[in-house]
Image (cartoon, rainbow, N blue to C red; front, side, top):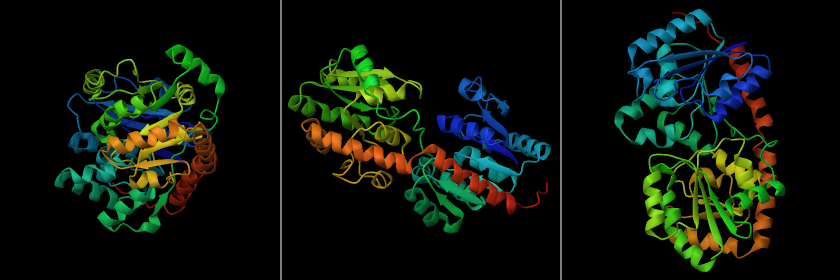
Length: 380
């Protein structure tokens, strides 16, 4: 079976999907339309997948939504005509998904990220129309949580029987409790005897990191040995660093920067509590990775998080934009090591049962086979 996999995002989940498809003997062509400043080359992790065919198109003036450019659509149609794929797999709805919809190709598997359904359509009427157009031209949709599915159905009345829900999952062979990694990272940070909080979301408005920082003065006043690991980068990085400095938290907070997926398990294992103050999310891979590493979690009470976290059972749910609530729940966990252990153990069990990448990729393959058996004759 030949699959054209279209992605301009080129994230870790793309690597996982592409690697799995190649391992299962699919003929896979990765097609990526990007501006050179964003991706001068395909990330090495993906480039090194043996057997993967890569078509990397660069256009100086295709910033923003590349698929709006007519010449990109024409080029993409020519590619599909030449490659004659059995299935077109597209991702981010406002770029890759829209490009797939404009191509006229069928069958199409559309795989939204989450924010392209939950946030982007609310930003403007144009974006909402693009999202609706893209959804209605998909043959089947895979999304990572029921929250995204409900939004799709409410917005477009797309047949919910053609929407398959499962989390993209994580590699449990890499994310698991490991005390040896705990010691190494703590020694590197100089925090061997401290209680560590970790947040590893991008420094962008949607993740609400400033509300976590606003909660820290109360947390460290109650638990002075607390230290904080912030992993990531983004447009708000300098602002967040200034916020930390203004509140005299420099000795408590360490900005680590962006790290690789291979490095992440060590940092998660070094921590005592995982925190995410996101204002919107689909199923968060960061959350699942923390759960798999036996961390109790404090996360916002958005719908997608409620699909994974039962308040008081494997973590705490906190109100949005509420530093006082964040501080109270984090302090509760820091003061009770038995509760941290209990919640962490519950999270490991949940992750192994529901978030195993190997199990969930089987579901993706089943979707491919269903589309292949019902594929339409393509006409250009």
